[in-house]
Every structure is written in C-alpha cells, then in structure tokens.
Length: 185
Image (cartoon, rainbow, N blue to C red; front, side):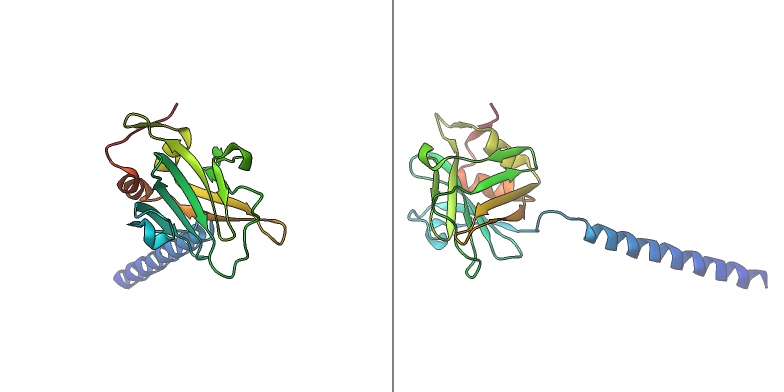
C-alpha cells in the first residue's frame, strides 16, 4: 500500500505544479503591455513614401503601422500610419511618440519637424551629420521596449496605439544605415 500512496502523492503534486504553471501563464497574459509587432525592412515606395528608400516597419494587432526611415535630406523620421476604418488624424496637431514612459517626442507644427495628413503623421527624430546622429529619441527607440503613439482624431478626442520595440534595433539600423554612429546627447 505504501507504493500506491507515494504514487498518489506524486500525481497530486504534479497536478498542483501544472495548475500553478497554467495560472502563472494566464496571469502574465493578463498584464497590460505593448501590442506585439514584428519589425521588418521594406522598400519606401511599398510604404507610400515618395523615395525608394529602406523603411523599418511594424504593424500592431489593430493594423496601425509605424515606420522609421532616412529621408533624402539626412533626417531620420518616424511615422504613424493609421489603418483604414480608424478615422483620420487632425491635420493641425502632431502625433506624440513616447518610448518606455520616459522619452516623449512631441513637436509643434510650426517648428517644421512635424507633418500630418489624414492617415499619417510623422516627426523628425534625428539628423545625420558627418556619419553620426546625436539624438536622445533615436537612441531611446533603438534601446527601448515599447512605443506608444498618441494622436488627435479629426472627429475629436485623443487616441493611442502601442508597439513592441523587440527586434526593432536590427530593422531600424538596416533601414537608416548600419554605418551610422548613434549617440545620446
């Protein structure tokens, strides 16, 4: 009888361990966080950009897309593109990008670093000078974990969408140039 009691205890212990693992995974899935997004590199003309440049892009679960690219003028830009059916952006307001709740990128339309259309809004996050970019926002983007984009809708009110920055560094450097030295000021 003793071997069967031991076996029963082992089975009960195994069931408790399995239940603990399942409950732990369910709890982790419940935690709020950025929406997972796979980063890839595409051609600019495939993304609605006038140049045929490389663009690092990620699409989140709601269908919104974020692009990071190097403009012909040597500027590094980040762009939020809304998916069809999600309304439009207010053209007199800039999209705000926030990285890891520590670095917020918000600009005034009059400063010339923000552009906005019905379906997309973008800002300049760095400028290339002699093979290097000194930019706290770009440095944070390459080394951060989450990106939150906030925007004013044409119909009123503010909305936000988020992206994971996992694997973004590799894609962004492939798009803007691996030979660049990226530094925080």
